[in-house]
Length: 141
Image (cartoon, rainbow, N blue to C red; front, side, top):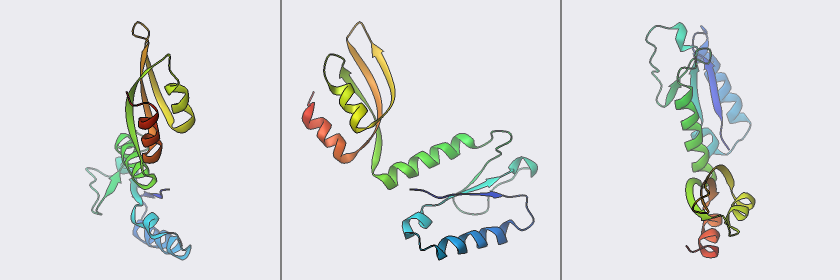
């Protein structure tokens, strides 16, 4: 669903390496949307003082120090949701009904926060548009 190209930005041939990787990817005849949505990651930025990417949409990270990893995770999540046509939603459900079981079968349940005194739960899910449409028609409340 997504290509993440991680480059050692400190390598003396980093620009040539990028060109080589792009050439190989193009020769694989991948769908154009994969190449267009590729995430470019510049790693080892901790070794270059005040590093700022000059390439548009490149993310600067230091895997060693954890710098920029949260932004990278958010970018990957955003792109994956876009290319797969899914979204992240939080729905309130009644625990006595079949909603939670249905969500586990038809979506990706990420988090369940139970409110036992109310008999309800807040459920965070990753769900496709058609599955969410079915959910709304099955459970209109």
